[in-house]
Amino acid sequence: MSLREENAAHIKVDILNATLRAASKMDFKSTLVQELCTEVGISKVTFFKYFPQKEDVLLYYLRVWCLEATLELKSGKLEGVDAIYYLFNKMAVSCKKRPGFMLGLVGYLSTISDHSKPFPFKKLERQMIFLDQPEVAHIEMQSIHQLFEKHLLHAILNNAITKTSNVKQLVNLFTSLLFGTVLTARIQGVRQMGVLFKTNLDLMFRGLA
Image (cartoon, helix red, strand yellow):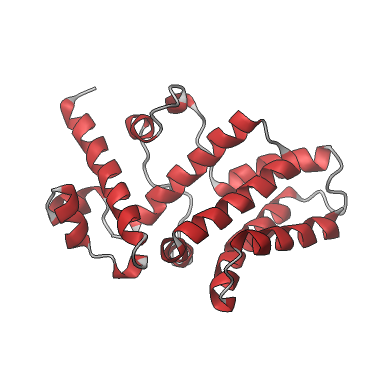
């Protein structure tokens, strides 16, 4: 590993952390690149070298979020329906902690035409973010869609879902419910995020049982 690679990893992680701190005080749209650069100690040229658009920080965070979810599911030995409830609760917690940031993420995802190329998230960056997880560099990276697919298959095989076996349609359905609940909570001014996410998921599973 070269010093250049290490510096690059530090810069990307520092930009993410600075953005998350800023987003706890204001919405993502109001967060200025220049202010992030000042906090991290880099130029705007350097910022855009790693994140061609400010919104790409959102995609980077999504990769971190998914990896964290993967690690926590593995640690808690959660599978199937339990794992899906965990993912919804995790999103509820994230929205409560960073409402403007998560809304920015959902909005930006709706503008991207090609979701087949996830934002780069290198092994060294994973190790810097998850210092207490020495195996993190070797964990298989999974998207939200892939996490849903894995655990919906488990739910079907264990007869927790009996109404349909079309996994692709189910993945789309649960993904829509996850991100749709983020928007609904904002539109309705919901404060008890966890209750709304759980209620929607309860209704979904009730209809599929």
